[in-house]
Length: 445
Ligand SMILES: Cc1cc2nc3c(=O)[nH]c(=O)nc-3n(C[C@H](O)[C@H](O)[C@H](O)COP(=O)(O)OP(=O)(O)OC[C@H]3O[C@@H](n4cnc5c(N)ncnc54)[C@H](O)[C@@H]3O)c2cc1C
Image (cartoon, rainbow, N blue to C red):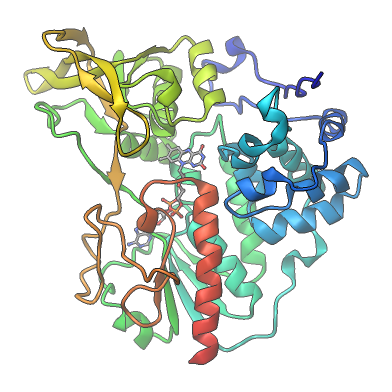
């Protein structure tokens, strides 16, 4: 018999639905140690292979169970520079690979790591840096990819300056994911720690006019890392998307996360099944709107993190599956509803998920005065006009197959602006690869 996983403390629905307090309160030390006890310490740990960064979770759990917290943190910080943030939002590839998951609950690895990072501070080696190399690197964008690149390059002795377009730092950790999943104070604290090792941050400084890169090189930078994410809305292309009351999820979440308020509609339809959709609908609900989801596939195909789908439903949010909008209805240039069509699932498409197929003559209308589109986005490359740069048809940066190098010598790229919308841990993996590539490049110049 496999013991059930220890459940974290969760803020009750009635205590969370009208505010933005963190919902998952994590483990106590006692709970963390009890969860470590469940680990089988497999000879060939699938959790390690499952993590895109190959984080040695087996060893972290062993050390934690022996209360050797500092040593466990050394391993964690060697991989992630912001573990308190990442262990709150990662879709836990490691847990999905855990062998216990085949017959019962996998080990709750994220909650164990989160407990350690929340309670035991930085390991002593955090601020250790190699002697200065005299090389300067410009990092464009302060999201997970930019932060990781900046920190690990600084540790190797390079002087790093991070340029950020927005007034706040952290990319989607700060302006995408809402407070009830990832408190802003935690992101800010982890960035302050990166500052301690000498990384310079320049918020409110879009690298736009200088995007031919020669200017950055003339200013004294020896290499550039582009980590601008994917922040340009991609609309569905259905009639009515121009109407007042239609907004893209990224714009909605950014404005709300920056200002702490948003003029929400009385009835809000959120379109999509990913994290952006679930985050948007939960924010809209907390702002007082009767908010609901329209999703063209079924629950099993939703890309959002499963616990957050459950939490949204607990909060009274309705998810309308197999439903796709085909037209936004308007009056006096304002949204008054959506015309939708019912879908059925067919054979798998290129994503491996069953293809949603419209059911003929199944059109129906839903009332709504706001529509949040959370289906798709792409990198905003309008200012990246250097003719040597190459882009894919999804407007992502093309890089060399084996390295993170763009066609411009000394210019590298990684994160969502290369892979398209992904996850935080994948952005970290890209950035760590870029660090190796940039370091090798700098040593040769
Ligand atoms: C609502 C939402 C919820 C999500 N939830 C999760 C989750 O639960 N778990 C998970 O793993 N992933 C989640 N993701 C995905 C995750 O946030 C991204 O994959 C990750 O942030 C990508 O990191 P990045 O550094 O590549 O880009 P970003 O985080 O997008 O950061 C890019 C930064 O570059 C800046 N920038 C852009 N252009 C310029 C310029 N010209 N000059 C200077 N700066 C510029 C931007 O302002 C931004 O700060 C979510 C995404 C969204 C939108």
